[in-house]
Image (tube, rainbow, N blue to C red; front, side, top):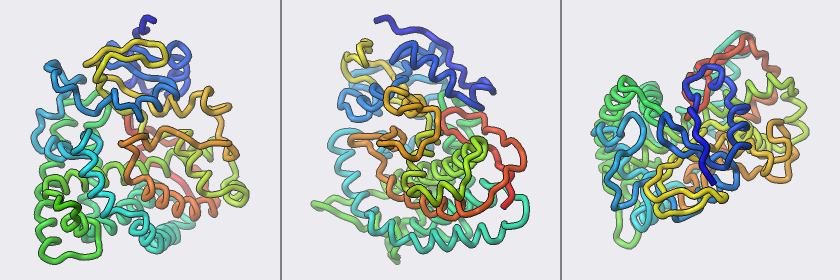
Amino acid sequence: MTIPKILFPNENKEFIEDPYPYLKEIREQSPVVLDESSGLQLVTRFSGVKDIQTSKNFSSSPPPDYDGESGGVINPQDYDYFWKTEEFSLLNLEGELHGDLRNLVAKAFSNRQVQELRPFMETKSTELLEKLKGEEFDLLKDYAQPYSIAVIGRLLGVSEDMYDKFLDWSNSIVKMYDLKVSKESAEEAETAAREFYEYTYNLIDEKIKDPQDDMISRLATVSENDQKLSKHQIICTVILLLNAGHEATVNTIGNSIVALLKNNIDLKEIHTNHSVKDIVEELIRYDSPLQFFQRWVLEDTEIEGVEVKKHTKVAILLGSANRDDRAFKKADEINFDRESFNHTSFGGGVHYCLGAHLARLELEVSFNNLLSEDIELISNPERTGAFGIRGYQGIKVKI
């Protein structure tokens, strides 16, 4: 089967506002399409995306014998500090090293330790909303961002006076994760990565000397079979938790509340009649905060009958997969009574999101409060302009 060629419109404003009609069009055209502008083969359907997430024939790193270009306009390895924060990220590792590091991180990041944050989350969410009642405010800047960064800061053991700086660093670094990255954005990310690396390196030293009940202290002391995490590996883990945990939570809150209000869905009614867990899963599926993830093909293989060659770089379109009618009946509709919420947003296989339990708990606590309120959308919010990490610049509301 010949792979159809397209020019993916990821810089088109109308597409950024609502990519799903176009994603449906290419999904119905083929399970794989070639984006001529990036050189990436885009995997469009739920089945293909799920298969890749669990297959050992696809990797976050190129095959050892590959000597070509990394793909994309910007090569992340050309930016020293950005790459230092990515080098030992669990998202970028495979095989035994990935397994060993993941086991160590998991010991320092158990469900029990995350659940202990629930009272803090509930208090923080309530306090923020109480201060905002009766006035117009920005749902992202005034609620979602301070809520999420406070939770991550509390988890990591970062002082409150650094929360704004962590927020700035995260906002700059995640610009490197889009399909196309400008030189300006790459340089901004490099500066943020350098500052973050230097700060966290010194913070780890402090935690080693005086360990506390926080995740950086646990990462600095955890061991298994005489293995311990290096400072470099801890920094890569912390930046992953910051970027994945904070950005995904903020954008899920924003995307979800706007989707509910624009679809004229009664917030209090769904809160009364549905489990908050089901509400969270359906809203993550409906408008995914992360729209794609890239993988390398390690050996010649097929994706739903389409042949893809070794050394090819593919992008699995998570948002497209989550709107595939083959997997979800009437996928373009919000439905909290689905038989399954088996979306692709948290990955799969050995790379299943290690922080999924934290993200779900943050969102459940947040939606328990938000869905108890009468929220009015004051104006039509604008998207950030990025495709990969899907969110809004700001969302003016009133409670």
